[in-house]
Length: 130
Image (cartoon, rainbow, N blue to C red):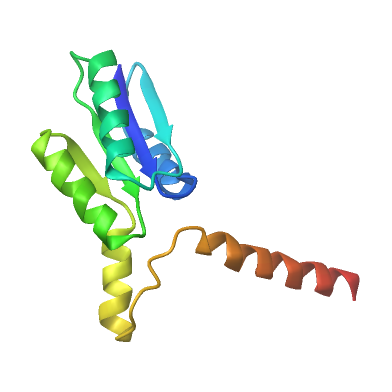
């Protein structure tokens, strides 16, 4: 069984989609995906990962995370490196690429994707009504 952890400062849906796409490329007998949504402290993240290590002592964990707060993101990377856990920062490289290309500073706030989506769906409803 391959345990995969998803850590997010919101829901973790973006990381879950990436995990699903990546896992589909392997013939794995069993994959166990566990999520920690709403992670706002390094203590919560450390506890979640440590618990997973206790539950799966014979398995190598893989962690995918989407954390908008740059300080918490850096702390998470340091923690996972210290614990020798393989990880993927799903959001960080994309934010950094857009920031470099646009010369803009990211807002570094979780949940903003749903704000955009809500406005999009409101526009669609207005178009459908008309």
